Amino acid sequence: MRILMIGDVMGSPGRQAVKKYLPELRREHDIDLVVANGENSAAGFGITPKVAKELLDAGVDVISSGNHIWDNKEMMPHMDEETPVLRPLNYPKAAPGRGAVMANGALVISLQGRTFMPVQIDDPFTAMDQLLDTLSERPRAIVVDFHAEATSEKGALAWHVDGRVSAVVGTHTHVATADARVLPKGTAFVTDLGMCGAIDSIIGSDPGPVLERFLTGIPVRLNVGSGPSRFNSVLIETDDTTGLALSIRRMDCADSE
Image (cartoon, rainbow, N blue to C red; front, side, top):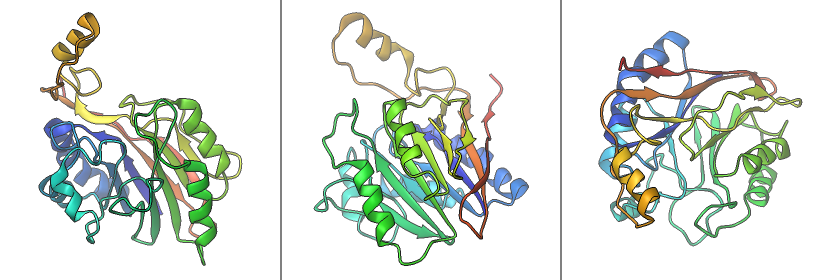
């Protein structure tokens, strides 16, 4: 199975990058499943039903998320519907939505870290163990978007489930890392996918307000950057017999600046 995992989609520039690059990547590499992190896809904060449809129409099969999933209240009534938009698995059970979904024969899981993160949620390690223990049969593949700040927490989760899932990919920092590898027991891992968003930006945001925050210490609303965009992702190939990873490699594209 060939699975493309796309980094945080940051506002309109990120959505445009997905629409520009994803269709050709799907055709060229015969991709079976596409997962994109969409928690910043609506003007940089959260997601709306309209934006979710835009990403799905562009070729995304499942939209994962993280700590910004609740930023647009417009989406909350739709989280319990069939639309494949996930909130992190380890939110309390009373939260709307679901943290995992079957898509094209694969189980896709959205998970959120706790270290340096603003939201107090349940233990991601325990949440993963509990979900895996409930599976009556192994899906064709199991992929995890682990939305976390600390690189150590992302790596720890990957090693914790090594050999039990096909892949663990990190999101949240919007900075693509160069450490993609298959761990010893067969789980593909990369610390962070990166983002789909404006190149001339600070992790997808207009540099002006970000600099103002750092220089003055005063809270300022951030705006999505503009101009040419980059598209960060990884392509994972799995063995249908074992469900484990055969390879993982970066698939990055960028507009000419």
